[in-house]
Amino acid sequence: MTTPTTAEACRSSSASTAVQIDGFRGPLIGPDHADYDIARAVWNAAIDRRPRLIARCIAAADVAAAVRFARDHDLEIAVRGGGHNVAGTAVCDDGIVIDLSAMRAVRVDPAQRSAWVQGGALWGDVDRETQAHGLATTGGIVSHTGVAGLTLGGGVGWLMRKHGLTVDNLLAADVVTADGERLRASADEHPDLFWALQGGGGNFGVVSAFEFRLHRVGPTVLAGPLLWDASDAAEVLRFYRDFVRDAPDELGTVVRFGTAPPLAAIPEHLHWRPVLMVGLCYSGPIERGEQLLGPLRACRTPLLDLVGPAPYAGFQSALDSTVVHGWNYYWKSTHLPALRDDLVDTLVEHAFSGSSPRSYAAMFHLKGAVSRVAEGATAFGNRQASHAITLDAVWRPGEDFGDRDTAWARRFFAALGRYREGVYVNFLGGDEDPGRVREAYGDAVYERLVDVKTRYDPDNVFHHNQNIRPRVLADRS
Image (cartoon, rainbow, N blue to C red; front, side):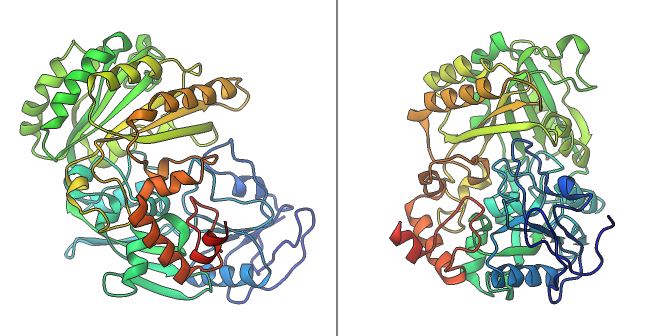
């Protein structure tokens, strides 16, 4: 069956009937379409949902038309940007998926140091276009992450300590609201909505395009991982704690606990060996970075030192093959304080006890520019936390690690309970206690988000997300 060129939708999960969606020009994919299983798949293969219709938009007008159609036909709505969210909220059962994956255009204005980015773009798309001008903005650590999801949740990445979170660099957003209206949100237009989009997730509308502030970055940075044997983890973490405490904002670090992945750059004899890996990205002058990193590179004699000058865009994709589309993922996460000794001991005790060789924990160093933005200035919460950690159970389809490593992630999370300082909303999974959404923001920011939700989506049309319920519905629950 060929892709429809007219607006065709499916009324049930087993049979399709041609209907018109006024103003929709993109292809529509139903259960009897040859591409249906591909189109409904998301990054996390543990998510297996069957929408009634996938509306693949090619422009903002399609997004508005799809929202109106869904409202008129009382259909559940899920919104897909890059489809990378671990909770799988980009797809729903028996509803409509508003799919922006064909909308990946990026337009850079080097004179204004800004970029206009469509809502289906991936960070690799953005980095490729911006780095052609020696520019970038904070954009995660994996190039196949979607721009929309990462941005709307806040946006942590290698550059955040120097240039702020992704939302700190958001200048404006083109939004389709729950009634199908198209708005532009910025500091001057619908400022309440713009504030909510800066970390409040997909609760307030479908963002068809973003405008970002860009910064001079690279194109060459000093970057790469250092690997130590897991037996050295506690001592290295204590050194790392003191090292990053006074590190300049130009240095971004991510600590990974797990096995050495079988990457071409890693010698084969180290593949699958339990290691502590510290990923580094220094965006300042290379010579200064070499001096700065010297003490860390000398700590406990690493098994492998791959730190060196590298293209920023290339480094952004270096971990892509370790978080593959089509594997199964289960996450637990929390923010953490500075790494005092008892916390280090807890991390090391649990981090290497997963069963799957692909399971890992990743800890992001925050502070810097992240913590210098006042709480409540954006919807991103818990800005004073030192670290964000995600405990990632990973197994391939057909492997029997799922139950064991899901239990490992839960035990590890429970062990971190007394250290918890909020959570990054993009790291929340699909089976979280609803109270964790409030935990991601803090009470004051959460209540303000409820007010914005009540104004722009009083019926909670957009609830396939880490949901913030509007005031009337929240009061009834």
